[in-house]
Length: 161
Length: 367
Image (tube, rainbow over all chains, first blue to last red):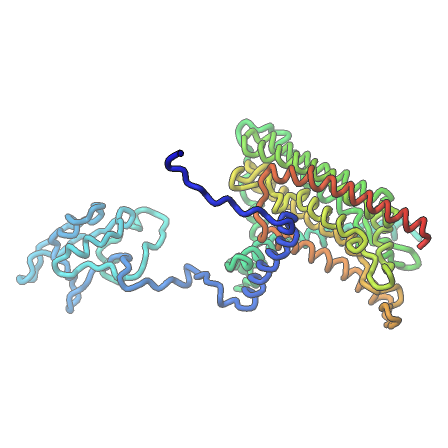
């Protein structure tokens, strides 16, 4: 007795009618013309999304492009604490801190760049942020662009969404 | 009549035929993509637009042609420059030549002179067709060999083996039709199909030669390198087969040759097995249905109906190529060869034998 031998079901032998192919081909043609006519008659049923004009609506927890939140008076909520940059496994956040003129706030970001080409969309920066300044809830995946420079999102771009 | 008349007629016929075949080729490329998309529940080409109109993507062939014209004409390193450049011509020229013998309609009398709706009514019609379409293999073999690349070479080898094997059964499958209509001239065959069989059925090739029809259409698909026999360009294993290394207009010449083969093949199929320009029950002066009812139809309408019937049949068989392509998967190579030599060839011989026997019995029986 051999060990570990598994009996695999062999494909069923074709009947004579099937081995002639012709009838089966005609049946297949029936199926395809059914799809063809259905799709002509019910054009709206085709599940294709016409991408650049129409976008799929993403579920609310989808991690898309980042945005920076603002305070009620319009300044960025970010205090340049470097928590997100530290948490980032892809090392794609560059922050340059500056001293804030507001005595109640210590620092503010002079530069806040996210290199979208390096970002892995893990959401660690959102988790790390102590003041809910960065979110990934825009529902947008990175739009394509033609140069690398354009895909480094600066603070102005991150704030406008 | 003056020679000027003859020249005018010839040029006009050439122009009409070219317009018909190339027009159909252009439309076919669109139908292929759009039909594929709809069969697979997709939308297909719908982006190219003129004046804001897309019209379901019908401008895509135009965009393709422009793209082909403006792409770089590339010759790979190590290619045999002469044969590399000749190959597309060798592929395209026979394809265009084959359409010369297909009759579009009955002879027309213009200004007291009979004008055949052919480019050339050769008395060796079918033989010419096979001889010329067989030369299409040279284009493929040359392309595959001169590209100096392994995939095109494999594709060309496959293609030549396949086309030569199926040419045998294709030629033999037609012999039955030739025996029944007692001519190799396509116009004679088309005329012969105007009679009635047992007083009910039109005497079309498909009714007198059903097996011959199945064999012929199968061999035709193999000759035209269409699915399920599109081994020469099996993209999953050979990238694109014999035209892998071709770009720009040379590539489009191969594509055109392939589509012209399809269109001419469809026209020949209609002529041999579906009565060519014959419209069922339509005589020279009107409809004569079995049962004694007859409807008079003016002569110009008869002519239009007949040409329309030919065009309609051709378009239907062109669509059938697309329809079959997106229905059946590709055969494996050894299956193609086995089908060609072990199934098609004996069946074709059997078909000839049975046809001969039946014809002999009819002859002896004096039907």
